[in-house]
Image (cartoon, rainbow, N blue to C red; front, top):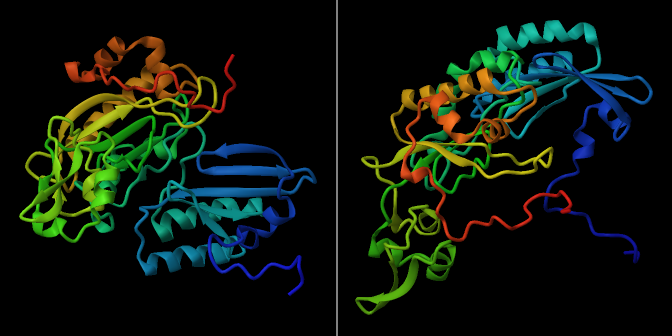
Length: 357
């Protein structure tokens, strides 16, 4: 083998370039403008004037093989066989013929039964974690709650008349893999993990000890063998330990509830990234429709629509009008638990890509 020749790569992510739509390959890095033609439809224009249309549809994320084949059949007919899924599980159909846009939308809505929207100043599909179907430590079904919430917010998906783009996430445990968002629904545990010594015996104890963010788990000896113990006054009920060892069971169908956080932001635009803050908590973990959660999210969205200025994200709106007004507008009760008294809050860390003055 020549010195400058590398062995074939057989691990990691594949080269995405060969999966791009031909128009994207021809104009990669050469797009000069884009336009949100209508809710769910983008037009990108290249340096040479070539146009590429994107039609976005909301998917339920968990799809049967039959539904995937139906989606691919539509892409074969209109998009030269090319489509892509976004990180929020929207399906984006890519095509170059403007005359095919409306027939494609009609087929998506009728044949596939999926809504078209989620672009511009709208609510995109909700980012959520695996839930009961796949996660190893879910206390609720994030995907089920998402279905219920989006049924309530359907009009905000197919229209683009919000003050700014609105991002929502849902997490089935307190680890919050759904990440920060304008509105986030997160499970809330209310007691330390319960120890099952027989199951703990099969766990890698150093990992169990090391995963705790507040050092509430420490090594111990019981019955002549190594195990762990929980310092309950330090535990913050996050459940990270349960992900490392099923012998530390923290889920409880009788006490687990849901909380809603607001104001999270990951982008570096304007004020930079921001952490979420608690809006309301103690909502019943009430499958299969979680009506109390949907109602609470609806209140926040309505208050945001009525009070925010153009292009303000949820957190920016709250910072401008004040938290007192936020609680008045939503009707949520303000309690002592809304006060951030955590001693090690990273208030001085530079968490953005913006240069400090």
